[in-house]
Image (tube, rainbow, N blue to C red; front, side, top):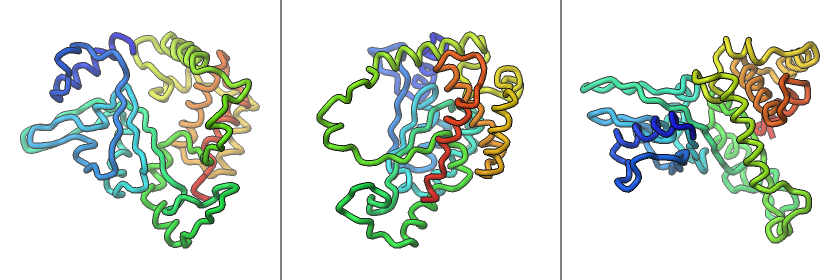
Length: 270
């Protein structure tokens, strides 16, 4: 984190009474793993005297929601506004407070209640009925899914992948260096106003994400083919800008748009 980010996060944990006495300054990004029994108040914040919730404790870091389809739908829906506005306003009798909530949401779930739907080369066929699959997935509403930039279907890990190191794979250090370089590109691009592409407003998109003729045609075709919302359109462009930054490219090219689009592959249609 930058020093400014460290101070932001440290203030939050100090207000919440969670700042370790032996660590007066938090220097690493928060990682908050929320259990599916968590209440809406514990996630967004609240109480008689409004206190920060998990989304604020994950500010400048990661909020991880494992088994997201097991969360009550009303709990998941409270994430919609913070994911859009990157802050949350908590109103109680004794006061109204706006907390920062600029976090990266990472969520995981099974494809169905039994976990074997569309699993390749499995000796355990899915035993769920169509109604059970639909009911299970309905916990994730369309508007919430629209706010998640990357939807990835993952197959079980093969035995060889668990026990051997595949030849040609990049090391974690190599990937980290590339990410740090892309982050530095973004810091120089925006100065002190914002830190990442995800936080870009409309004026930033117009200044830094202009699409060429070919990229524009690809996005136009994708809007029609995939029935993308206006929100999804801008999120795809922001993601394409990040992909271009990872390759140290100054302009967004069609391959960057294509890669960003493939991460919105409508996995829930399977």
